[in-house]
Image (spheres, rainbow, N blue to C red):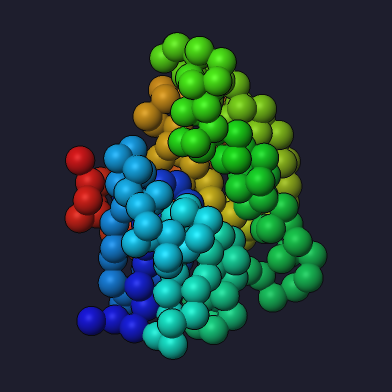
Length: 216
């Protein structure tokens, strides 16, 4: 059994981000699933682990708790530096974080499960309303991301250069969520190209939602 325990849900994009990073770093971990749609993340046993009741949560060998996917990934990158998930230069690191946060801070927070559920409960949104909401906010984020990636000389085979980074991890996880809501990627050829490059790599494939033990 690994010293690292990852509490997650196969379809959670934030969990997917951390799984990719763990696979890229070659780190073994214990996979503990929590079915979000069944409310398992709100049960007392899990709240005793992570009082926020969200996934992912990473428990280290000494029992220390880490939550929030970007914080977890940067911790993994600092403590296991190969392969690096952030560039060596300050400007490069800022660019990669910028792209990652355009997804993790601008798109994901308004499209996660608890927000979509609240739209239904608090405002009576129907299924198509929720789909339209999700697509709207993805497109609001992907349009500028596509322009930045397509026009920047720093863009290579991946979001930044020719090796995958934190930005690619966030992009791939978001696209996995997009597929469930029928988001059209035709307007985003650069994003689509980078996504295909990422999905050709074993770490991204192994971490994919459909390959997890709790996949349905």
